[in-house]
Length: 136
Image (cartoon, rainbow, N blue to C red; front, side, top):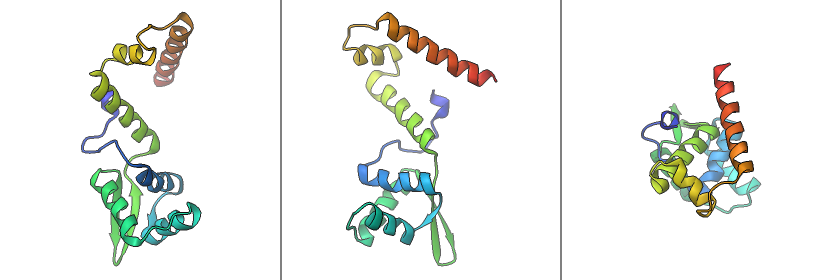
Protein backbone atom coordinates (compact mmCIF):
# COMPACT_ATOMS: atom_id res chain seq x y z
CA UNK A 1 0.00 0.00 0.00
CA UNK A 2 2.82 2.45 0.80
CA UNK A 3 3.88 2.40 -2.85
CA UNK A 4 0.62 4.14 -3.81
CA UNK A 5 1.37 7.23 -1.71
CA UNK A 6 3.21 10.05 -3.40
CA UNK A 7 5.85 11.78 -1.34
CA UNK A 8 5.42 15.38 -0.23
CA UNK A 9 1.63 15.25 -0.46
CA UNK A 10 -0.51 15.89 2.58
CA UNK A 11 -3.54 13.61 2.36
CA UNK A 12 -5.89 15.84 4.36
CA UNK A 13 -8.26 18.61 3.39
CA UNK A 14 -11.10 20.59 4.86
CA UNK A 15 -14.65 20.33 3.57
CA UNK A 16 -14.25 23.68 1.79
CA UNK A 17 -10.98 22.58 0.18
CA UNK A 18 -12.67 19.38 -0.95
CA UNK A 19 -15.23 21.43 -2.91
CA UNK A 20 -12.37 22.84 -4.98
CA UNK A 21 -10.71 19.44 -5.43
CA UNK A 22 -13.91 17.64 -6.43
CA UNK A 23 -14.56 20.34 -9.01
CA UNK A 24 -11.06 19.94 -10.49
CA UNK A 25 -11.33 16.14 -10.43
CA UNK A 26 -14.64 16.26 -12.23
CA UNK A 27 -14.00 19.10 -14.69
CA UNK A 28 -10.22 19.14 -15.18
CA UNK A 29 -8.00 22.23 -15.25
CA UNK A 30 -9.72 25.50 -14.40
CA UNK A 31 -8.91 29.18 -14.01
CA UNK A 32 -9.40 31.08 -10.78
CA UNK A 33 -12.51 32.79 -12.20
CA UNK A 34 -14.02 29.41 -13.14
CA UNK A 35 -13.35 28.02 -9.66
CA UNK A 36 -14.77 31.15 -8.03
CA UNK A 37 -17.90 31.03 -10.22
CA UNK A 38 -18.45 27.35 -9.48
CA UNK A 39 -18.16 27.80 -5.71
CA UNK A 40 -20.37 30.87 -5.49
CA UNK A 41 -22.98 30.15 -8.15
CA UNK A 42 -23.24 26.37 -8.26
CA UNK A 43 -22.37 25.61 -4.63
CA UNK A 44 -24.27 28.57 -3.19
CA UNK A 45 -21.31 30.05 -1.34
CA UNK A 46 -20.70 33.73 -0.88
CA UNK A 47 -16.92 33.62 -0.74
CA UNK A 48 -14.65 36.52 -1.54
CA UNK A 49 -11.59 36.21 -3.77
CA UNK A 50 -9.27 36.11 -0.75
CA UNK A 51 -11.16 33.17 0.77
CA UNK A 52 -10.97 31.10 -2.42
CA UNK A 53 -7.33 32.14 -2.85
CA UNK A 54 -6.62 30.81 0.65
CA UNK A 55 -8.17 27.42 -0.19
CA UNK A 56 -6.16 27.19 -3.41
CA UNK A 57 -2.94 28.19 -1.60
CA UNK A 58 -3.49 25.55 1.09
CA UNK A 59 -4.19 22.86 -1.52
CA UNK A 60 -1.08 23.92 -3.44
CA UNK A 61 1.02 23.80 -0.24
CA UNK A 62 -0.33 20.29 0.43
CA UNK A 63 0.76 19.20 -3.04
CA UNK A 64 -2.80 18.52 -4.18
CA UNK A 65 -3.01 21.31 -6.78
CA UNK A 66 -0.49 22.32 -9.42
CA UNK A 67 -0.51 25.88 -10.73
CA UNK A 68 0.61 26.55 -14.30
CA UNK A 69 1.19 30.16 -15.29
CA UNK A 70 0.75 31.13 -18.92
CA UNK A 71 1.46 34.83 -19.24
CA UNK A 72 -0.87 36.65 -16.88
CA UNK A 73 -3.18 33.67 -16.52
CA UNK A 74 -2.99 30.82 -14.04
CA UNK A 75 -4.54 27.42 -14.55
CA UNK A 76 -5.12 25.06 -11.63
CA UNK A 77 -4.82 21.29 -12.01
CA UNK A 78 -5.39 18.45 -9.57
CA UNK A 79 -1.94 16.96 -8.86
CA UNK A 80 -3.44 13.58 -7.91
CA UNK A 81 -6.57 11.77 -9.03
CA UNK A 82 -9.47 11.29 -6.66
CA UNK A 83 -8.57 7.58 -6.41
CA UNK A 84 -4.92 8.37 -5.60
CA UNK A 85 -6.05 10.81 -2.92
CA UNK A 86 -8.43 8.29 -1.33
CA UNK A 87 -5.73 5.60 -1.36
CA UNK A 88 -3.19 7.95 0.19
CA UNK A 89 -5.68 9.03 2.84
CA UNK A 90 -6.53 5.40 3.69
CA UNK A 91 -2.84 4.49 4.03
CA UNK A 92 -2.26 7.55 6.23
CA UNK A 93 -5.17 6.60 8.52
CA UNK A 94 -3.97 3.00 8.75
CA UNK A 95 -0.43 4.17 9.55
CA UNK A 96 -1.33 7.03 11.94
CA UNK A 97 -4.10 5.35 13.93
CA UNK A 98 -3.34 1.64 13.69
CA UNK A 99 0.45 1.53 13.40
CA UNK A 100 0.09 0.19 9.86
CA UNK A 101 -1.57 -2.96 11.20
CA UNK A 102 -4.58 -4.19 9.27
CA UNK A 103 -5.30 -6.52 12.19
CA UNK A 104 -5.58 -3.55 14.57
CA UNK A 105 -7.79 -1.75 12.07
CA UNK A 106 -10.11 -4.76 11.74
CA UNK A 107 -10.25 -5.09 15.52
CA UNK A 108 -11.32 -1.44 15.79
CA UNK A 109 -13.80 -1.89 12.94
CA UNK A 110 -15.50 -4.80 14.71
CA UNK A 111 -15.30 -3.30 18.19
CA UNK A 112 -12.76 -5.91 19.26
CA UNK A 113 -15.20 -8.75 18.61
CA UNK A 114 -13.27 -10.17 15.69
CA UNK A 115 -14.71 -10.84 12.27
CA UNK A 116 -17.39 -13.35 11.44
CA UNK A 117 -17.19 -15.91 8.63
CA UNK A 118 -19.26 -13.82 6.19
CA UNK A 119 -17.03 -10.79 6.67
CA UNK A 120 -13.89 -12.94 6.33
CA UNK A 121 -15.24 -14.52 3.13
CA UNK A 122 -16.12 -11.11 1.66
CA UNK A 123 -12.69 -9.76 2.57
CA UNK A 124 -10.93 -12.81 1.08
CA UNK A 125 -13.00 -12.48 -2.10
CA UNK A 126 -12.16 -8.77 -2.44
CA UNK A 127 -8.44 -9.46 -2.00
CA UNK A 128 -8.53 -12.30 -4.55
CA UNK A 129 -10.37 -10.07 -7.07
CA UNK A 130 -7.79 -7.34 -6.57
CA UNK A 131 -4.91 -9.77 -7.20
CA UNK A 132 -6.66 -11.25 -10.25
CA UNK A 133 -7.10 -7.78 -11.77
CA UNK A 134 -3.42 -6.96 -11.23
CA UNK A 135 -2.30 -10.20 -12.90
CA UNK A 136 -4.24 -9.40 -16.11
